[in-house]
Length: 89
Image 1 (cartoon, rainbow, N blue to C red):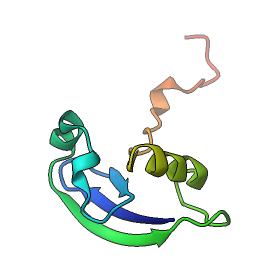
Image 2: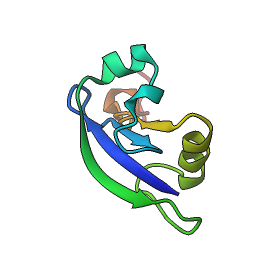
Image 3: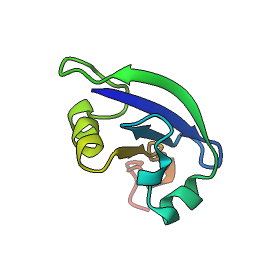
């Protein structure tokens, strides 16, 4: 299965995988508005042995087959103030 990957120019570190190149019609209008302009990044074959840096390729393939798209959101930032600092304060 081929995936066409686009990055959002409005939302940092947000990517959209599409089953069809430039097939933006499958994106719900509210999501499309939030993402803003999408710039093509790459085309990738999602084979069963393919690994992706931040996403589970099986989940991506399932979403592409069912919806025609998959959205990769940025990783959540770690807040160091929430760590246990070993004090009783």
